[in-house]
Length: 389
Ligand SMILES: *Cc1c(COP(=O)(O)O)cnc(C)c1O
Image 1 (cartoon, rainbow, N blue to C red):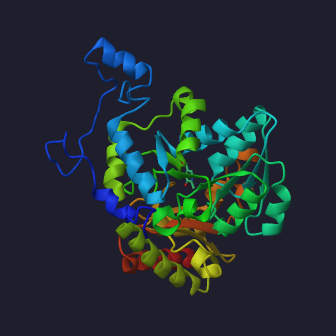
Image 2 (cartoon, rainbow, N blue to C red):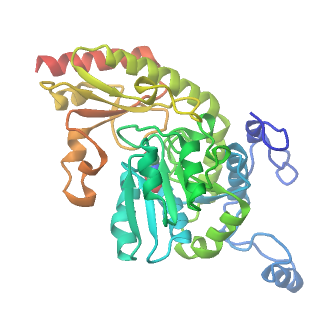
């Protein structure tokens, strides 16, 4: 995999400018809110835009910038911008491009808080969002004319509907519709949407990019012009800036992203096949177990769901698990379980799990890095307890 200059983008992960860092192999953290000027002239030139240098961390911070450059290289994008959370990246990006009266088309079952942003905040701003099954290209083509933005997530959060991202991006381009995708699940290791024709790629960096469950962060990558637009329209005012320390943790996470993703892929596939072979399991929602992977998706990660048949005591199953912890989020080293029944116990309306295709008999798993053998034994014990109950 090479970029336009013939460089392997992942080789850039290890690169940083060591001149100002005592030749340290790990970059320093510019843990500072402000940067001082050496003279009136330097300060004035900076204010006039004749000189680019940090002034205040909400605008520009060298550690955050280093993370942004590395992530842009990995996504094959011209530029990137870091945020305090994935939701800050999503909201700042959508609000930079959508105006009152605009319509957004989104694939159905998007990440629940993205859905709530659309249904609650955007509605209040008279921005309408319509939802389509991203696997149905005819339905997408029908919905696109007149839309401002096409919002994608592939595969989707719980039911793991995987889309032909390149084909959908081409449809949107034909209708002059701007495209953005939530690429948190696949990461640039397995899906590089810019190369598939998508305009803007966002991540919850809290998931695989960080990889150690110790940071909440987000990022958007795209052309220099579009990133400049977000910087001008929303970024400084909504203020969801990535902190220097979190950027430093993300730089550390990126170094091991490719090998972690390969381990998540192999172990999750092994666990998914193991579940599929169980008599008490009705179906497994894993993109590699459904059909062939769509073009552009070159691998699969550690997050998938499965659905029990009737008669399984799901609370007993959950309480017997030892390696799989009960917890939301995913993308770290640890294995996690979310029973659909718990999600569905929330209220109706946009806060309800019913909007995301979740069944009460379904369970979402994140397969971490503990090793597939031990994880399968953990599931076997929990299933045995759930059936005996
Ligand atoms: C977690 C998540 C988000 C939101 O990211 P935060 O960093 O928690 O704000 C967005 N999209 C997907 C698919 C996620 O899993």
